[in-house]
Length: 153
Image (cartoon, rainbow, N blue to C red; front, side, top):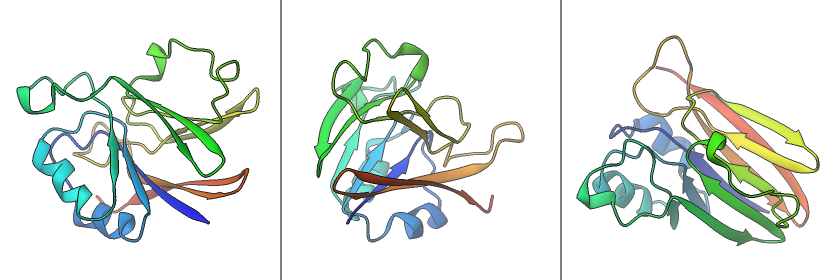
């Protein structure tokens, strides 16, 4: 079983509770609006990180990040982007099993046409009355167990 940590919309704030949750993951995916390269370095101390640039990642230090990323974890193909509304591929036709996004600050676990969509919510500063959250994927062959967890604000 492979444990993949999911985090998004940190906006420069890496909460200790988020770090605790991500500890022990074999990979971490950050779905954008990171806020600083230092935050990514801290996450890399926990596990290898795949990160995409969000609409607020405008500084030079994050300019080299891609807008999307595709990766294979075990038998699952993942596609990562910040804003799900900007999804420019047909995931099912592209052979993607899981789409990871951020941007909305709203946690989401939804399956559509055989593709799993996951947004861990925002792990940064609270926005409106939305929860503070992180997520994980437990991948075992072709089986995936997604989970989004609300953190204390």
